Length: 411
Image 1 (cartoon, rainbow, N blue to C red):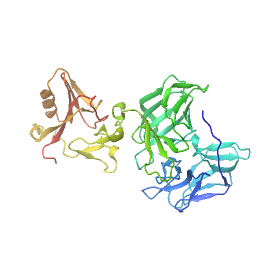
Image 2 (image 1 turned 45 degrees about the vertical axis):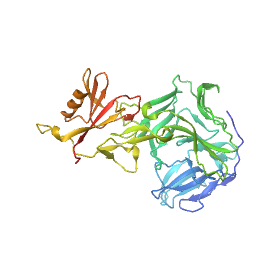
Image 3 (image 1 turned 135 degrees about the vertical axis):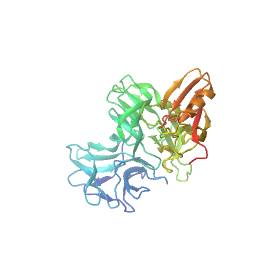
Image 4 (image 1 turned 135 degrees about the horizontal axis):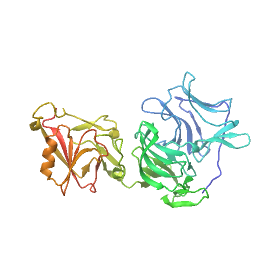
């Protein structure tokens, strides 16, 4: 494991920062990182650590991502020896769990780690031990720890995906039973399942690898990159779309390229996730298709619209009146199909018919008021599906035809 000697300036007991103050941050000696408040689009404030020298001010850690602070909230290294975040009324929002040790000072390190230190120079608490969605070089993920993706690109609260190194020594990417984000659902990429994982290490040279309790590497490196830390910032983040990505950024102040992707996994998130419960990568009644940079796009099928126009991954609703099951004719003449190729919603079917024709599959769904989508595979397989549709995906590997039932003329 690559290590470095930390550089820091002491933050003395009694020091505090106020949300809303223009200069409310504690900066590392190199000024590469800052600890303090950032204002969100909602007007509330996120306490966190960010890359300080770049225009994006990219956040890498936050303890209150699920409980944003109001203007006037305060984080203080208190005289009773703890780091505490309180709202304007003095109510506690978050407190660093330092145990019984007595703190002498705090420091924002050049590694991006914020530490509470005793008089004996022992680190009693550090942000590196409680990651949010990001790992920085020299940081490790220990057994019983996890990265939890943000809910969306602009919403930093806990989302639907996690990278978990369990106490059982297994490392995998999982969906969560959102909003119970601490409850693991389905794993969609396994890195270690033999119970040998002890720490996930993000080294300064850009490699991300798992070691056992004897400091031996297990399996192949998750990411194996040669990165020159003198000229590049870097981070590994589990993003809101469930993809683990390694980003780099040229340190030059004249650089305008921003963050670029060095590596990522899984290769195709759209086909990686299939879960018995939950919506899949995208929200219910939508489907996932890889776009530019192999990023997933969540798309509503014809006749459907986003539940929230600002959240592409939030799912879709049927934008017309459903078929009436009480009508003897079942309104067959008022409905038709839109056809999508290479689209499916696995595990959403309620009936299956083998050895039928495409036309039979289509007509049977049309006559069934419960059927919202029919899926046909060449060879005679027919599946009927009903809402909510889950695990939606569009990929050439799907090789099926989707018939989306819609009301003629809408409405």
